[in-house]
Amino acid sequence: MKRYLITGASRGIGRAIAEKLAGKDVELLLHGRDTVALAQTRKVVEPQCTKVTPLIHDLATARGVSDLIAEVGRHPIDLLVNNAGIAVVKPFTEITSIEWEQTVGVNVTAPFLLTQRFAPRMSPGSSVVNILSVAAKTAFSNWSAYCMSKFALEGFSRCVREELRDRKVRVINVYPAATDTEIWSQVEGKWPRDRMMSATQVADAVAFALARPTDTLIENITLSSLVGNL
Image (tube, rainbow, N blue to C red; front, side, top):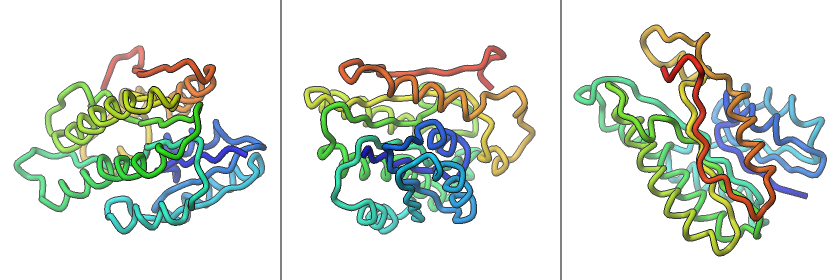
């Protein structure tokens, strides 16, 4: 049985990836903070899986990450999807220290700690998938905290890829353009969500990369809409 850990699986890209990777020989370890939304994800994927384990933890805190690690247990996992993320969108002069620390905690420190814990125990052919963003490569006004966190995670994950290469553990980075998820409901302003990519499109790309032969590594996947990046 394969064990797949997906953070931020309550909705959006995380839920879409869970739906895409569900299988009879798979245990899905699904992380989220919204108990109700995570239960909905579980309801959708459970009939297709050997086992579904919900993990309700706050990745903004070291305690939340350590509790998640403890609940996953000592048995190795075959896939880690670092998908959970938060976005603070405002001029850099208005970002509070708490908002900055939460952004770093969820978007950078949590993936670091989870990768550090689980990747060394992965068997050859296993994978770490990081859901980044075009914001890991491009600067956007008022998105300084978010861009900072994605730039940081990209740098970390590229180095980890080289460290794990000899062990045949793949590190796959995904860079979606604006994707229609609930994150936009928390961002001020009017956003053309009808022109954005869907979470399913991102999940399709992840599934495609994971389905390649284990000695084939698709290092980076950049996804954009034909209407352009928003």
